[in-house]
Amino acid sequence: MRELTILLDADKKTPLYEQIYEYIRSEIRSGRMECGVKLPSARSLAGCLQVSRSTVDLAYAKLQDEGYIAPVPCKGFFVCDVETLYELPLEECADVLDSEEPVAWRYDFSLNGIDENGFPFATWNRLARTAILDTEQHMFQQGQAQGDPGLREALREYLHYARGVECSASQIVIGAGNDYLLMLLSVILGKNRRIAMENPTYLNAYHCFKTLGYSVTAVGMDDAGMCVEELSDSGADIAYVMPSHQFPTGTVMPMERRTQLIRWAREKEGRYILEDDYDSEFRYTGHPLPALQGYDGGKHVIYLGTFSKSIAPSIRISYMVLPKSLLPLYEERASCFSTTVSRVDQRVMEQFIRQGHFERHLNRMRGIYKEKHDRLVAAVKRQSIPVKIHGENAGLHIVMETEWEQEVELYREKAGVAGIRLYCLSDFFQTPGDHPVKDCLLLGYATMPTDQVEQAVDALFSCWF
Image 1 (tube, rainbow, N blue to C red):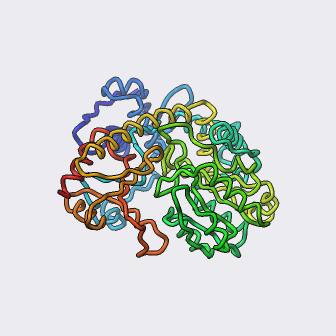
Image 2: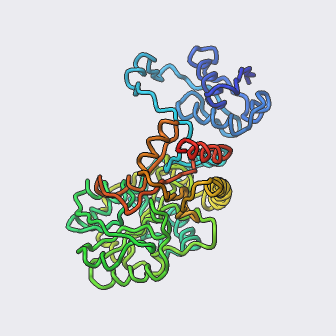
Image 3: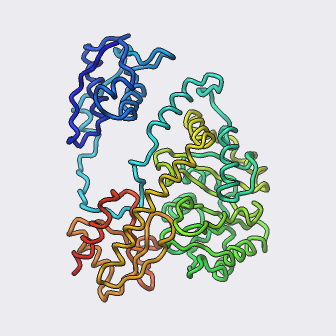
C-alpha cells in the first residue's frame, strides 16, 4: 500500500474531494503511481488528511468512474492500466467549452436546484458500489421497458403510504425526467388531444406539449386553482394540474375543487387529469392533502412524480402511474421503448427507498428548507415596506405581492444592478406579454446558503429605497 501526502487548500474554490482526485489522477497519468498499486483505504486516507470519509469516497468514486482505479472485493482499490485511456488536451477542451463567463450574482433567489450540501453522498456512493458489484441482479443486462420491478414495487409502497396513490407496480412507468414521460404519454394517447393548463403554469411542460404537437389552451385560476367552469368551456379533454402546490403561484387545491375536477373527468369518455405532484414532499404547516389520484381511484388521473426536488435534478428518475384503462394502449403503442434510466441507477434508488434512507433524507431536507423558509418569511415581514406573501406553507419558494406604485419589472432591474437575481410571476404565462392583474416577485430559497437568507432580503429591500 502506498501512503499519500496531499497538500489540500481549504481556501480554494475547488472542493477538497476534487483536489484529492486531481492529485491521484496526476500521479497515475504521470506513471509515478503504477498499475497494480494499492491505494490507502478511504478511512485511513481521510484520517491522514483530516477530512471526512465521504470526501475521500467522492474522490475514489470519480477515479473509479473514469477508469483510473478499480475495487477488488475485500482488498481495496488498485490502480488500473491507463495506457488505453484517452485524455483530451487542455487546448481542445478550451475549444469545446463555453467561453462565456456566468454572471456572478451576489444573491440569486433561484427557483431551480436544491441545497447540494444536503445530498447523501456517502450513502449514495455506497449503494452505487453495491449495485455495480451485485452480479445476481444482472445490472448490465437490459431491463424491462417500464423499469425494474423492484423499483416499481418500492415506488408503489412509498406512493401508497406517503401520497395516498392507489395502484399496482404494473401501472408504473420509469423514465429519465418528466419530459420523456410526457413524450411517452403522447405515444399512448395520440396527438388528437386538447390540453388545458393553468395560466401561469410550469413552462417546461407547456413547451413540451407544444413541441409534441398538442393543442394547448390556457385556463384561468382563482384562489383554489384551475377554474373548472372555464375548463368545461375550453373543449379540452386533458387537464394538466399541480394540485399539491401549483407552480408558480403556490396554490394548494382544496378538496372541493379536486372533487369538481374529478367530476369533470368522469362526465365524458376519454377525459383525463394529468396530475404533476410538484414538490409535494415539502410542506411546513399541517398535513398535505393526498394526491388527487387516490380520490379518483386511479381511473381518470395520470400521476407524474420525480426525485428532482426531493433528491437532485441530475438523478433523472421520474415515474408515471397510468390508469388501468390505459395499460392495453401502453402495451400496444409504447412498450417497444426501452426505459431511459440505467438499471444501476434504478437499483440504487430502490435500495435508497427500501432501506429507509429516502425517508430520513426527506425529513432532514424538510428541516433544512423549513429553516430557510422561516428565515426568509420573517426577514420579509420585518421590513418597513408592506407586502403580501402567498404560497408560504409549502414548496421551495414564496410569492411576494408588493403594494408599490412602480412596476415589479422595474424593481427587478434595480435589483439586478445591485447583483440580486429575481423572478416575476409574469415570466410564467403561456403567451409572452401576458400579465397577471397584479404582478408579483418569486423568491426561491433552496439553493441559497442558510446564513445568507436574511442578508439577501435586507439587500433586496435596501436597493429599492
